[in-house]
Length: 246
Image (cartoon, rainbow, N blue to C red; front, side, top):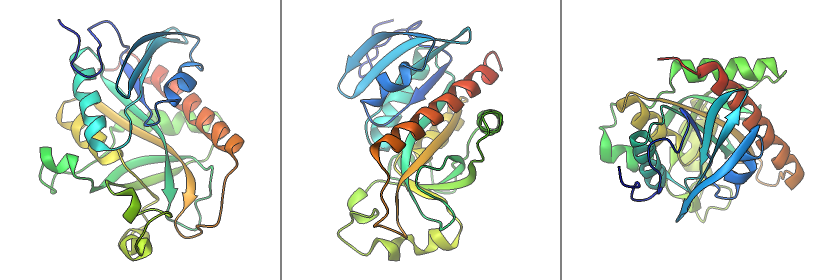
């Protein structure tokens, strides 16, 4: 098989479980948590490392921001053998009880994105795979972490629905806040719909780095790094639990 058009990978280049950070710089950061890792390919924003963790083969591929870029990565990763996809990322908190630096594990996504609508009508649900969800929750508990587990929202327009928005973002957020949606980000609904339809598994673990209800709150860079490291450790432990499951 020729290399995939965007990610430049062929069968054998990745493990069964692939971690999907949006930030391209986080691919190397996540790979550094593997027991061993090697650089595999880079094209555009798609950077891939593959290695091992506790005896299983795992990979990380950065996707860049948003559903269109993530869908390309997932479609092509499936073609080269990936089966489990775990998004490791950041988000904006929507609920008062969610603090910056907390851990969020998504059960489902509100489909405010455009990419999943290109694939499926809005009646099609964006839900996490049960096995991935269970593995993430169990792995968090084993590390003494009490995550927020629930629904997140995905959308495409950062500057109309974030604390840096040029419009009244809280007016847009109101139905989601009242519906107990935990946070807002850009990729989860695309990931969940696509992996479900392609008979693969998708999960998401996030940490809030901004808060829509408290826009003046900030989180130090070192605390963001610690939260990303914790997300990665939980995701790696989940990958071990998922290894070999059909």
